[in-house]
Image (cartoon, rainbow, N blue to C red):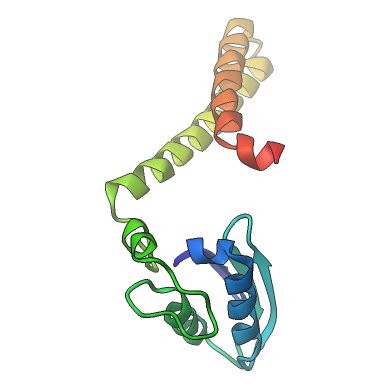
Length: 161
């Protein structure tokens, strides 16, 4: 299980088990039974759950502990959830927190570099336009379009399907 985003009263988690509609629905029902959880939306295509909760009635810790019981591969799955095969257990690293393995860290660094590259090229292009430096504006604009192409290629599945 990986926490994809977390702000006050809102939590999004991702896990391969949540791609199974029956499993996602079972986890959703369990979470809705927890006092303070107002809404749980499952997205089986993305393998994620969006949980809206009231901080006055429940804590993030209670929710993640409950999710860990249902989504951690080390523990056997409760009877209400479909089980995982041993191959599935070995093939996925489920944990809470920032990525620590190199294979998980590289996509994050790449994503940050692409975003920073787009922002930098856009700002330089705008500065070139404001200052009347036509060549700087054109070169920075071309760089921006190149980095934007990388960004769109990385997001192609989200954009097209």
